[in-house]
Image (cartoon, rainbow, N blue to C red):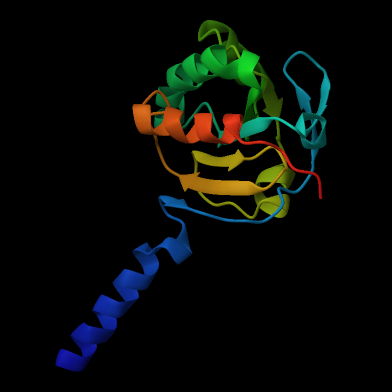
Length: 172
């Protein structure tokens, strides 16, 4: 019985540890490039933002937590866009009309890209669950992966983003 409890405790630890990335985990891999269409019908590629800090948020209109994050992403985008921050919302909604209505009703200030087939979400980034957000530095390296809700307007998150914005970009 003690052995079974020990195994269960170890399994619970492993499932909730940093290796499983349920909450936040550092990554240090290059962010895979992708090209998607925005709600304003522009073609947008991640590589276009090299040299900027990118907050890449995967979300959907049917996700309550995702909808709750939108105001703090709006604030973050408006506060730091002139310093080199790019916020990209990647919607995995399949209903484009509902997405357009939601974006207009909520005055989303950052680009919203459509990944209806979930190619970028599933195949390129191997994500599960939403919201899922990646923080990508100026070199295109994923510095953090967050699964779940975060207050992007919180002082500690702003400090983290400011450190990345203020970092000098060195050439390879």
